[in-house]
Length: 303
Image (cartoon, rainbow, N blue to C red):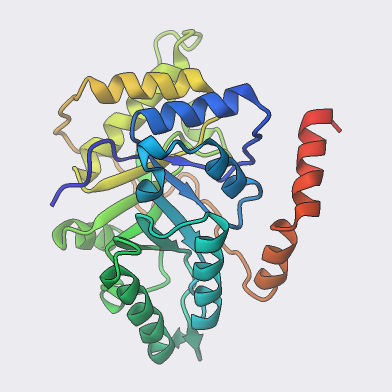
């Protein structure tokens, strides 16, 4: 089964300022073109921005994927409940668990994990969600041990993906869904975009942004087929409008990248080692009205 039309996911991991016209414009472009949205209660101001600007006509809730912790059953239940309440949801497209699972003596705690899976499956049966995703980290889990997720998230850039080759093949063969993060190249490094730029005949081309987006789209559609959500975060409307234009051209890419690197041969590895010990307290802090007020003050007063 193919994914719904327009499988680009507008990532809301950065701070979105409701007072910023460009931020609002990007959101309106995304919902008008029926893009999906990726967010979390752990992204300050995201739920406020989403709820305030969502137009009921577009039914954005049905196209929302929320990131939650899955390292324990209790924490997952808490974040599911808080997510539904904070985003004012009766249903959404799905939840994405970050790369931690319940562990005991360096092995997966199967009993605890089963409680999580049964709970999430009940949400699906009750039409609260449609899909469950898990973020894979290279060399951490055997994918056949966790083959109950609908799809798997990872970081991917032209021309490398932070997946083990066997996991990539497994997802393809099992017809699972790819959830590719940092579609535009990632905010933590410009290494891929700069490498692309250096290969151009005219590296000073004013349309470097557009050429790069073309390359990203071609890479994703070539190497993951039609069962992919590619997640990108941008606060520049010109970039988003260009992506809309390229998607509407409905190009049929067919050739896979012969030089694609996997986890054993990466140019750059995105660090995802987020500790769980202080996660609950950290989540409480960044969700507070005081923290959000400070962010707005900093952004709008240029502190």
